[in-house]
Length: 455
Image (cartoon, rainbow, N blue to C red; front, side, top):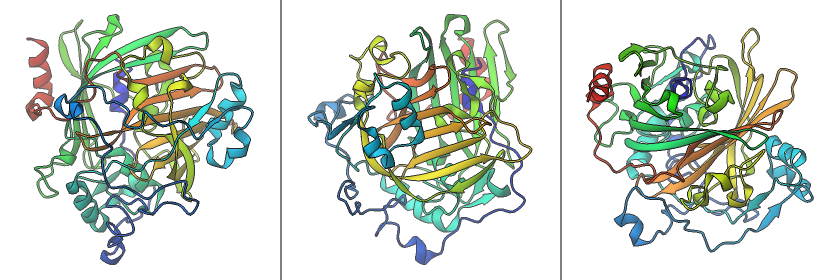
């Protein structure tokens, strides 16, 4: 139950007394679709030619993929070889393209940690409606209560031309990943000695924020509804959590309900948040799910300069159903043989714990892919300023969503050598399903949960 309550991490709470309005002028917003993509990335490549221009297309997949939606996606770049393989011997020559967490792993695990750097691809255009909504959001969306909520946004990045760290965070929190999803994820706690604790959760989600039949006027204010059913470990099998996540956390706090077979009752659930230990084995904090989720109020947020970094990208091989967890989940860190990194531009946001606030992580540095707003890498520091947690999230281009989606998330504890993995699909028959007929919204109510478990 603690593990799936991660998805219900609280996002409400006080913030700064003042607030930064995110609206840009119509003239400034006209850059979207011209020199910027419709969701705010620079269209052009870099001067060195190591980052190409945005392609505006979906990678090529064989016709069999479109005939069998919901199955594992083949790697469209499988014939490519790494440009370079970084190891403990040569990484320093590329340190300007590495994060502190990546450098720390080269130093801590010099015999096993490496990074395979591949050619960069900037494919994966979103549905045209997302771009249209992002253009509208640019001139209408704004933060409320200093950042705990937003208004005036729908169906796309609320702040495609961000001016503050909070705005970048919100682009990630409401990123476009399909209106309806039904899938089963595996997770694991991998301990330094190599032993593992496995979890399995079925997730059903409806996201009214990206409903293609809706608009800002008809939007109810709920970003998404989620039902999470625990399948493993066996002692928690049958537990169910229902989550309602509102767009404006000030007006309507996030709500959660739980069902446990032992009580056969649906009850209002406590909302686990901040640095409450969750996930398999309690290896990550509640607000580290998908690298970051939850309330912004305990940190001061600073938007740093955009940078070029090696980030996880086009990681189809990590989802390969022929890749066993025994081979993938190696000691100390996930098996680097199947990882793919590319050079991309990223937005960098630094979060510093506010004076008087409590959290085990005193500082966090986050790296967001400019083309998708996915949070790809994060480094977390303890109160003594020592790097402690370092996380990554893989990414693939889904042709059915369509567009880039975050996939496996990994959080490494550099002190213990343990790590937690979320959203594994290798042993699932299906990948994320975005093409299914949505469940009725009434299924995402306490009454709907009660009916579903009584069948």
